[in-house]
Length: 447
Image (cartoon, rainbow, N blue to C red; front, top):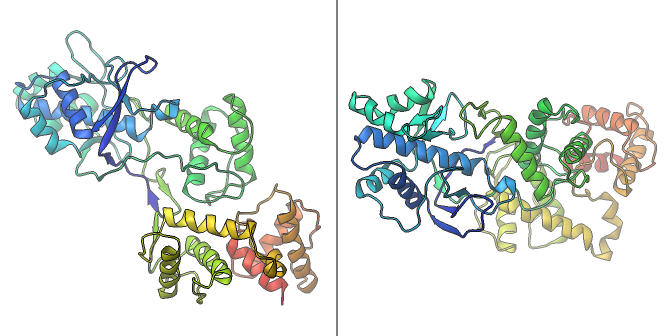
């Protein structure tokens, strides 16, 4: 299972002004940014526990902005602003204090979390003299530190006893959540799971959005219907497909209704950040993702002699490693024998390319090839008709399988037939047709 935990970025892009003011963006290291803000917001002569409490609040506030893609989801091309009205005070080229730099280097990969939540806490603060707020009082931390309180005690005083510090968070590149391509009917994976999770929660506040019942991370008709309604409500083109604009609008509304960028947050639990599809598949892994890989590798190997065609099942075994390694070498990927998200995208595009440019000498096999996306109720077209032709052959041989109409409409009869077929053949009874179900349908129909 894949959980999107926060990653401390190596760099951050700062807009030198308020969000809508024309100003430069600068990209600097995360630690330089935190040291600059801390040197602008607090005094280096304060007690060390006051300094630590303030620096952790600054880090956590910044991480919350980045993790929730607060500005990206609004269409901006930066992570945070330099304006204290919206974010924190950043002054370009200012002198930073040596003791603050030292503390930042020690604390930069720590941040505040609340309860058992995943997102960095939105650690709101103000100076406590000219301005007061519901969060941390910067000058108040000095009084508490002088009373002998630790930095954690100080933070709990302002943010509640249910907070803790996440220490030694991973550091790496801060990547955008949008996968880089439009997401639509028949696609599967973590991006689809994220869309479905977000729309389910948004629906509580916007009940006109139809429910999404499936939890397989597969973009089915009910997901199309929910996306269309969301697009209608928020004045987006009503396509049922999640492009970049729709993706970030969903993310922004989800963050807003859950108050993920708010002092009084509903929070994001580990279960909500937990997705079905793993980021890396390797030796010994089992499950539906492994079956997908085996189907695509087997099909590609049929047309490409550089990829060995080996016997596979639902376990990532020695044969999988050999086939994956050969595929990686052929397509200029790091040869690890493990299947990463990048490898998966190349694998899928390679298979799609074969479907689009199949050699005429293989034309007799065209109808047997999986169309490259999940088929589900509500869909229509030639691929559905191909599926129904195979099902028709099966139901004439096996009377337990309900009959279908070969009409190119994935209707109730088709779904009923698939559910029974999956049940009789030990497959996941989802009513959806992915590569594994497709392969079994073709195999049984051809007997």
